[in-house]
Length: 451
Image (cartoon, rainbow, N blue to C red):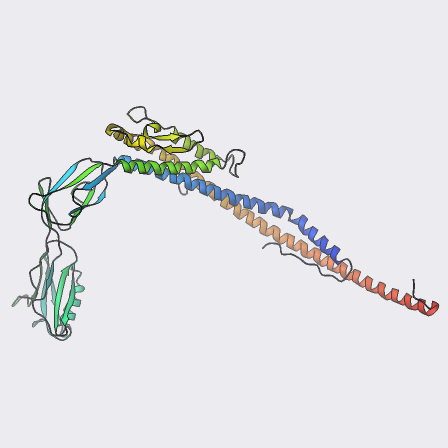
C-alpha cells in the first residue's frame, strides 16, 4: 500500500508548525517500516545471488556430466570416405573400428503408379463399370465400393485417402480434358501397388506397374543387407548412416570410427569456463568486499565442490592429474587450459584421459556433489531459495500491516491537528474582532487609535 504524503492545510498562523509535526510523526513511525523494507531488499538480493550461484554450480555439473559422457564413448567420431554417397547421421558408440560398404546395387525409393487411362472429367467421367475396385498395397487388399456419385476420379481419390493404407492418391491434370489418378506409397521400399476394377470378375488393371518401389541393397563387410529405407540405424550398433547413391563394382565406401580428441578438448574448455564462473561467484562473497552471502553455508559448500574437483586425481595410468591434460589451477582459483599440452597426448595418454573423466571412479563421480547442491526440489540451493520466498512473503505481510497502522496514526494526528488549527483560527478571529473594537473605542475617546 505504501505511505502517501499528507499535506496539512490550515487557517491559523501555526499551520506550517502543524505540517512539521505531522511529518515528524510520520518519520518516527516509519523507522520500523524502513527497517522491514531494508530487510526485504536484503532478502531479494540474497535470493538473486543464491540463484546465480546455484545456476553456475548447476552448469558446472552439466559440464562434468558432458565430460563423463564423452569419456564413456571414448569421444568416438564417425567419418565417411565419400559424403556424396554415404553420410553419417548419428554416433553413440565406444567401438573403434572401420566398416566397409560395397555393392550398393539399389537405393530405396517409394512405389508410385499412375492410371493407365486418362479421364475427360475428374468429377463426371466414370472410372469403374462395376463400381467395385480393389487396391493392393504390399500384401494387404482394400475393397472399395463406389456409389454412383463417387464413381469418378475425385470420389475414388477420396475413398483411397480414407483407408489409412500407407499410400496417397492425387489427381494429375494435364489439361482440361486429360486427368490421371496417381497413387504413391508414403514410405520407401519395394512394395506391390495395384488397383483392379471388378476384382471378382474381369479384374482389370487400372494402374501402371512401372515403379513398384525398391529396397536399399548393399553389402556391409561382405554381408548382404536389404532395407526399405536409405537410412540404416539398426545394423551397426550406435551408428546411424544413410546411403545416397549406388556404387560401381569395385567401389568401397568406408565408415571410420575413431577417437576425436577435439570432442574431449571442447568438453574440457567448456568445463573450465563453468568452473571459473563458479569461482567468480564465490570470490564475490568472501574477503573485505564480500556481498550479502558472506559466511553463508552455500558459499562454503560451493567452495568444497571446487576443492574436490580441482584436487581430483588417479593413482595409476599415464594421466593422473589435471596438469597431465594441460589444465592448470592458479593460486587465485582460476583455471587455464594449455591446448598444446593436450594436443601432444599420445594414443595411450588419450585413452587414459577417458579413464580420468569416466563415471564412478573418475571425475564423473563428482557430479553427485553438484546434483546435491543444485538439484530441483531437493537441492541445497533450492531449499534455501524456498526459505527466502517464505521470508519475503512474511515481510510483505508485516510491511502491509505496519503501513496500515502508520496511515491510521497519521490520519488520527491529522484530524487532531486540524481541530486544533480550527480552534486557534477561531481564537485569532476573535482576537482580531476585540482588537478592532478597542481601536474604535480609542478613536472615539481620544481621537486616535491605540499606539
